[in-house]
Length: 155
Image (tube, rainbow, N blue to C red):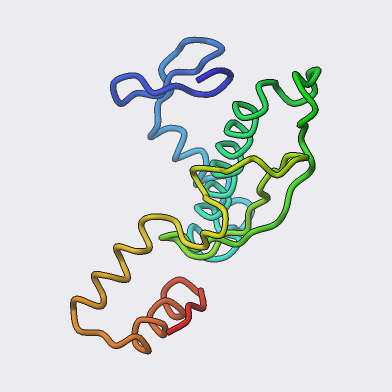
């Protein structure tokens, strides 16, 4: 991974300094900053939703860069170039998260981390199956998602 934090045997390595990042210290700093700003940990606009949004958007940008073959701002290798973003709300295990999905000019970019037309990330399907296996009706599952995640899902 270029220009990003790399994982090395369960450790995060800073790509600039090469130092191991203390994940607990990083989490403590993020929590302290969120508390100082009055942010909640979960829920719409919460710390986890913001981090999830940032991670997903960064991964999508990296996928588009690989698809196009050049970094943002560099000279394009062909006629296909970046073409802005489009908003999309995805349902995650921490609730709905609004992200900006990058686009390319000829529409050939097919993201992997958040596929086209997908509204739920992988973990949500397992939750739905688990609730169904426990005997909840589709109406009860929809009510559960609205209550716990603040997300409306169809029956």
